[in-house]
Length: 415
Image (cartoon, rainbow, N blue to C red; front, side):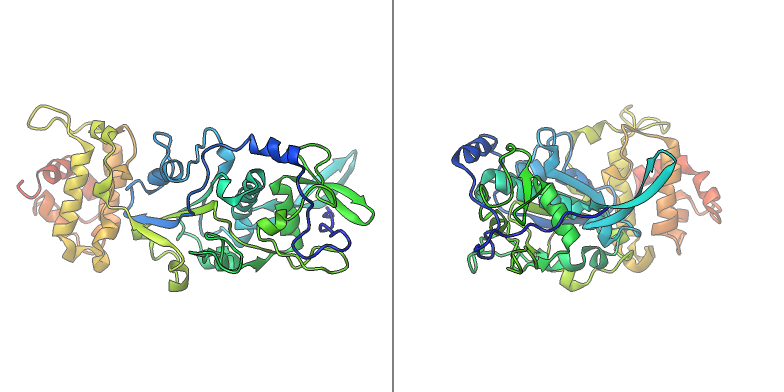
């Protein structure tokens, strides 16, 4: 499918003034839409820790909203468009992140034709929404925040996925050369397809040409809102898309991450070896370690172990107590832990994230984890826990003693 041509500059206009000024009544109409959930300062942070510590929960959740609500004012129930989530994996690519052409088929009677459509990636979608919010607010500091959340950021090849976007991660900590604090310190060029899709995401639709000037309608205003010579000015300058004159055509455009776009990542320390993160990539992020003991959600105290009886007080045994004992057991037997990476092998309360923890979950998730990942080379700590008379050759041997495993672990080290 052919793409519309790039927006053209009106004759005599200087670079960066691709759009004409908003009419006062249109400005007023847009300002009425602005709410109080505007930006403070951008966050660019990776939360890391052992499995089940609630890293994603801290960023965004259905209970209190998480960091995206408390720090950025993003209420996903009111403005779901301001929260974009994705998960990296080994097959995730730059095209999934920024955008890519996909073949489509169309039937007309007995005739089938193939055309191509450009689909935006998660980053381009978040970027377009952030720019759109700036246009609505007119002033950057009044723009609603947007958050891009990347779960399992190290399960994909982050260097290849970010590609040239990597350059945008450097943010200004103070104004420089007319660019406000929070913008990317450097811009990158984008392709024609990416530029056209970005204009569409911001809210413009292709409206044809008039006197060699490509026009785009801004759909949220009215039919007069065309990206051309009448109503918009400096919009692309505001969002830091640089424009050069070339036969009255917008070319060589570049983009920067705006201050109202925050990016979050999560990663399990135990998965750190899946894809290597170089130091140049790491230093562009803030990092926050999430310890398993920091999860103070009171609801976790109600999670019981089903099928394992009661404690000495006659109450059902609790999952939180088993997690504490499990992690203490790992620390005290650190010499037998694979590679000596203790923090990688501990678990959080959400390692099994259900209202009740069953025998099958203990056997097939918790016991398999400690058998296969924690003490995969040295099974002596498990033999000592269960009693040295137990024969532990296979995992099948081990899970036969799941009752003893839970009972002895809860009493550890005084069995």
